[in-house]
Image (cartoon, rainbow, N blue to C red):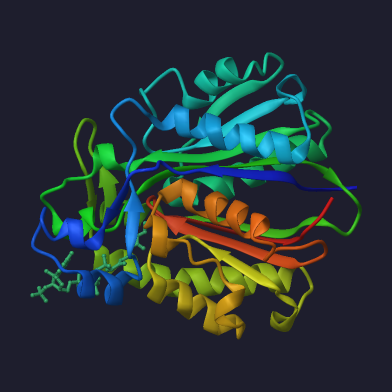
Length: 312
Ligand code: UT7
């Protein structure tokens, strides 16, 4: 047996913020945002909805798809940089709301790579038979740490949550290979001081991303003993369409074989990969036996990638 995804789910707030509406808030324009980032609109959570609420809705969706009861979960991992509070963790809030009374719970802090770190942490506990099912979530309310007067950052981010239930799957399916990495020396390029707003040196993060993302994709494909041509679907962190396209071109895969939810949701940090994954499963773009590559990068600096054969 190996470890794989038993079910996926996601939730995004209903309020849409378009590029046109942003033109009223900061000196920007729809053309700049579309051509430089690929973003057309993003979702913004209401004042009475915080990260744990979005995480809850995504979790319920994933548990339903996996056909697993909350009491069966052994561990809840929530990747987020926007927890409701410094502590208790979002994972503990979720454990209570789900009624997952047999689950341990903690948050994972690896910024936009958080869902990759969560998945690989889950894999270890399942492989060692410590836990049968692990619920992994990426959830963010980035709008609350966004400086709405800074056009360099406020046009980029959005709110949402994605979830996956991991457990054992048939031999040959599930996670085939992974890569996790960090370079703390680059931490100054993307950070948030306590109680303040997110700060990003876009150009520096861009330079890091265009090198790291394609490299990680190629590394996990090779580690899995596969060829680039074997990849059926790519789910990259949704930070910038230009960065995503560079990774896609390195694999030589067609545009319709890559998740592009950035257009509708912007960059949702740790939530972007699981939201995109869940949507593409629901859209029927990811099917049994497909080779799927997930790849993320972000603050830390951190990165992570996973190659899997889809199915249970
Ligand atoms: O999930 C975390 C990972 N984060 C990322 O992956 C982000 C990586 N970086 C990026 O995606 C890009 O660097 C950005 C989209 C953030 C910026 O794009 P860029 O092509 O690197 O633009 P830039 O920062 O070099 O700025 C070019 C120009 C500047 O004007 P000047 O100095 O050339 O006159 C900016 O002031 O664009 C200006 N600018 C804007 N103009 C209109 C910056 N933001 C905006 C804006 N609207 N929103």
